[in-house]
Length: 279
Image (tube, rainbow, N blue to C red; front, side, top):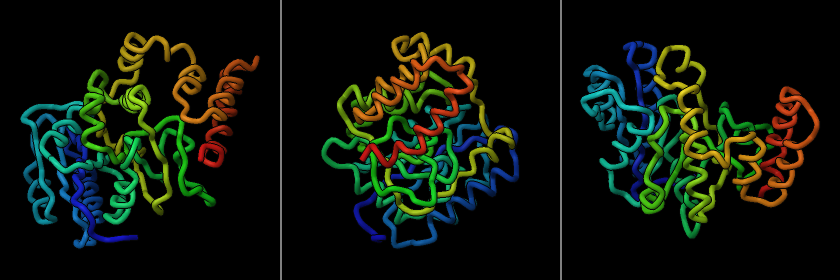
């Protein structure tokens, strides 16, 4: 993969209220991995949304050439990202979770997709909530997904400003869905592509108490603000799908006379084939 290129801002969301040593050294490890090739033109900012700052982490990041930013108060998931976005200025900005192992060259590969009507580019991940974004043995090159996670996302800064940055209505759930909806409402595409192995340790950070997220509260807010997308998962999927084929599949599966549990298995099957039919 190509080195160098135009400068790219990378904003990393970090939260460690419990002062877990594991989480502190995990983010130092992921940033060292990102920084291992110094030829990459990356401006990296770690935004700490914890109630108080971490001087030990700040010193460690400074040694890696990474800026540490604490807002002086506890920040939500989206507030942390937006604070970093406002602190930077390059045309392409990549939002990155603190538990993702990705190389600088892979960041540049994602950024290269931000052109024309592409508003966001995301990579396949070793683990994530959205089945179609999980890496497989035969991972396709490029497709147009029906959803995305907010773990690694390359954006046009101009496009982000048009849609109002990362949605702050919720604590950490449904931000990705809301942002996807807003991008699609503005007629921007979201691209999912294979940039090589990208490791995501999401479950480990949750076990360490790194998240202040409330799914229940966020679900109520989403239902209130986006009632047309809430009724059933299938309604959400078929309304936001970028390709007609997947839109029809999601619609048909949702209205099959099956239990929710059985439909969940079908969703997993649809997610598995989605990258191959949404090119």
